[in-house]
Amino acid sequence: MQQRVVYGAIRCVRSLKMGELAILTSFRATAIAGDTLQGLSDHAAQKLGSHILARQLGLIVAAIGDVWADPFVLSRPCCGTLTYDEVTLIGMVRTVAAPDRSAFNELLCDMLAEDSRDFLYGLFRRFSQTILETAPVSLVES
Image (cartoon, rainbow, N blue to C red; front, side):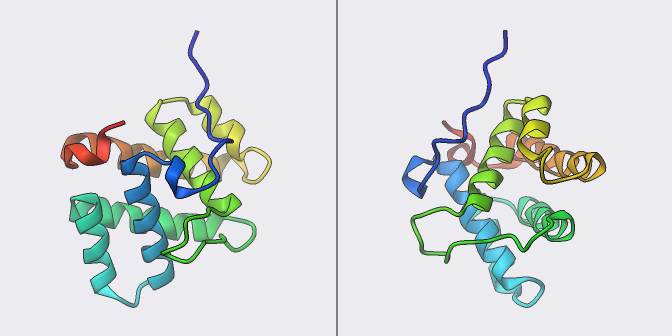
């Protein structure tokens, strides 16, 4: 029997793995910058270890902006606490990395239609596979 991914206990950045923290801080910077600052894309690439990952994360940020019913709420880049939406983001990262598609659907089924969940899952799955193929060990370690 496959064990479910636990994400509900996440409250602050100290409860994240190093790779998850890199993803979260890159997500925050990318979402805040939008399309305006190339330098933040470079910052995300440095954190994630790859320009490809930074571009894929940019696609995830844009997709979440398109499908989320309400504005995605972020903490400030230096903040140690996580918003509910950021906890959901880490939950998506963990369920895709598991991989546990049913847990991903369960996490989002009350918020998003099936086609939106499918679209996000595909983007996160591609991102997760690219991490395994190209990222430095520090991003994929537990």
